[in-house]
Image (cartoon, rainbow, N blue to C red; front, side, top):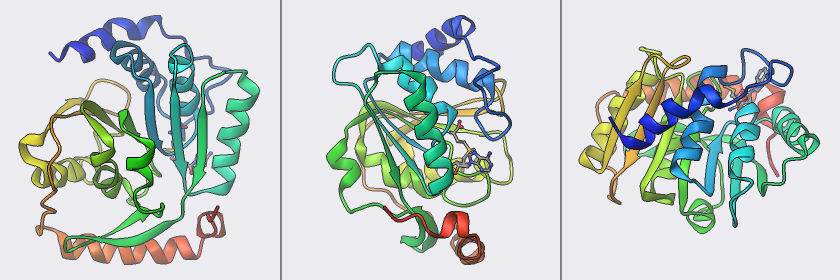
Length: 243
Ligand SMILES: C[S@@+](CC[C@H](N)C(=O)[O-])C[C@H]1O[C@@H](n2cnc3c(N)ncnc32)[C@H](O)[C@@H]1O
């Protein structure tokens, strides 16, 4: 087994997830949080990026806080939930350097695939990286999880990791894993941890390559994107996320 994953599994029982702090089903499952904290510890990660702010932000911030030059960039499309995550972090007293950033979800082409993607200034992630770890825990709906990996891959250091939460969902997240493998081939090494929480896909980035976005499924992915974008436009909570 990958030594960092083995170390994180050995460490996770020592990580406390307070029942008082854990906000419930929208947040990462407590055992996934424990693994994540253990994984940050095992990697000695200093620079982290996440898509989907919330309880995971606090769990990772606490782990990097003792490291010099630590930084966590936490991206969300919802002004409400981003503000809630920021408040929880600020009232925790954790001293890590965390930047909360709002980014609306907008359709964008990845090859022939029209996908919803966090709308961020061009080159921002590369400028703020390289990151040792990226967590993808974006909204549960089929919104922007596939594109998050395409957006962040270049900003993750070779030998760094990308973790996808809820990886056991056969119809959605396992589908993204197939598209990612098609796009990056041997430049990444995914390991599915089905027994932790709702499944975690822990992907090691091995090298920088240009993605070859798969044509397979592009039409249906694009139709879903248009449907989901219309839902977002009708949802005032998610439609207005401009900074
Ligand atoms: C799967 S949640 C996870 C967020 C974060 N990683 C965590 O562990 O708490 C993903 C998205 O759900 C939204 N969200 C957070 N709390 C929510 C709630 N109570 N109800 C509805 N959506 C929520 C946020 O916009 C967030 O990006």
